[in-house]
Amino acid sequence: MFLESIPVPIMFFDGEAGSMKTTTTASIKRIIDPNGINNEDNCNSISTRNDDLIIQLNNRYVSAFDNVTKVSQEMSDVLCRAITGSGNVKRELYTNSEETILNFRRKIILNGIVPSVDYPDLQDRMISYDRIPLQNNQRLTDKEFQERFNRLLPSAIGQIFKIIQKSLIHHEEVKQDVKPKTRLADFEIWGESISREFGYEPNSFLEKFYEKQKQTSIESIDSQPLVAAIEGLLDNRLEYENTIANCFKILVSRAQELGIDTKSQYVKFPKAPNQLSKQLTILKPTLRKLGINIETSHYTKNDGKYTKNSRIVTFRKLGIEPSPASLPSPQLTSLIPKRS
Image (cartoon, rainbow, N blue to C red; front, side, top):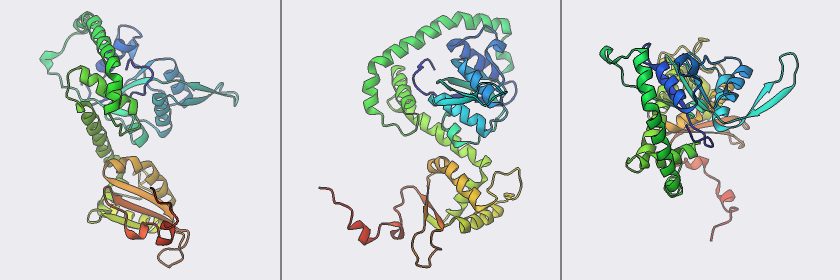
């Protein structure tokens, strides 16, 4: 979190009421970017208006959002851009159409009771952290907590910067060893470097990080019933190919067999073939982590297999070679220059 120049995933705490979500969130902000000494000084409600959310993020190095219950697609886009440092556009005034672009890279913490986070782009930029539940006899009064926190804070910050200093020395060496697998390449390298300075085995940080990302993808299946339908479609197959229109009908049938109400407005299942295309584009990263690759193309042949120029979708389990039908024709292959 102290590494300003790199994108760091959102720290996310969920869980039941009374599980110290607010205290944990506020304490981390107090270590990195304090607004005061009390929890209420260091936690804010997240704004649901894009312009207001952009201002919240722009004005703080660390934004700590408390009791988040839902994240919309628009909010997700703003949070993703804040993590990576892309520009955020906001209106200058609500009374005119003038725009201004704010460029910033921020660190974000949020908590809530299982908030709805259904967007793969945001899931890729978020890590959920587990906490050990407290027993009643372990709880402290606010005064006791503040006294202990203030006593530990200087030595905790001192250790943080000692580890960062050591990591700076060996960063380039670790960078040569790590082959990033996600869009958060800098976070993978720095995380592994810091982990090794703490004495952990090489690659143990990376293994934990990849496992967390896979776990997040699996947990998102419940909120994306289309994923379950696709997995069912490939249950006894290595590959499935069809037109978008036909595939839509088959996936609806498969989903209904699984007990999914595909017609309900409250269920995120495509209601038409064109909606299927959009959802497949969004779900590509999630399905890839689950071992399924999606390819779409236009069918240009006039051989009767499919209608010419129809849109084709292929689901293939990762690690499986494309079927011969999808390989280049001999005539095309002969035109590709051979490498020496």
